[in-house]
Image (tube, rainbow, N blue to C red):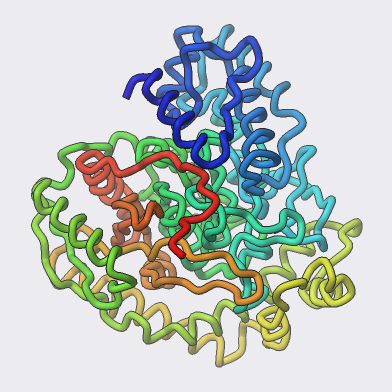
Length: 534
């Protein structure tokens, strides 16, 4: 699609939703370059040939955030922007002129979920007023690696407060700091998952890409709901040091982007280059990390690939069933060898023990994180957070409570037999008797399933009502999961997930990219107020 065609399409679609215009930026912004849906390689090419600077690009995103997030459709996906972003951009522009770019992220503005520590003029709060004003003593390892790659840390995204572990009656995308984040496709629909702000912001082109985090579904679910590519990596591929935790047995950070290519670029930047002494699980990644995941982008990558097709627990609704069927047919047309069906053994048999493990680890891991913040922090333990929420219930709990926090606080140490038994069961059923078993039995390269249903109506009074999801086996196993758009239900995005064994990111990226190139489902959001189905 040409630049002019893209511009006309954007103006036409947003006019239908209230004439939310895209700001072209200041005079430094080139008239022939459109930031909407612009990929990282296109941005780099424009900077290489002098049509664009990092400063102009950063200013364009800041202006777009002002127009789209704070005003216009009022997406509420950004909690704060980096007051040093433009100065950093100027420095990187000077470095480019003097030495050339560091790599593909040089001068590229990237957004971070608000549970990813940065030691700068931005705060890190997990969306909670209990951590308002908190500046951690050191960057997270993810932030350190992004800075080293030349990325501009543009801002912090809204999220489901405390990564959606406070209450089982929560509204995803709501935090006391940011309010309710909205889905840019249809504004009264939910953006899903705790990385909701990252999903909405990237879908709306408020940054080039974003970092999300996942314990179970919080990268792939918002990516599904906002038409993005999301990569939930193998546990240990990306360091969790300096990320506000839920549970060390499942937590990981990962990229959220508009294309597989952009997600692969970002994954290469944040993957641990060596064992991180602040996160021991990175030792498991020795010999499995790639410096450049874009070398696995192969449009013919599905030819001869053996793909297992999950059929059970996939009938989320009629449209998802239809779109999934079309996606499976597209895989076969692109040359994949299908094993249909190929069900993941024991799926659903460890749901209760998964929550048990998460609650135990939440207490231990959050207490350990809060202890790193030093004496100036107003909360130092999970018990302190619970007390803060009770004292500030009018602001912190206007719609839902903190029953999961209270259950976690009641748990004992990680030496308890109940915890150790639940963790052992989860790993056995999800790994060797689960994903490993089905992958080995049929000699599969990957397993596919619908990522989830279309976005539901946001309802603070009732809470979330998911239309189904497939994230749990890979999440509990700690194995990789990549979601790619596979169509639309009433204009709401739906994705297909590619899941594999440990450290199979290169293979999954190859398959996901080939599917993306064969189908090209991604469309920019239209910011409709509602579907008007009634």
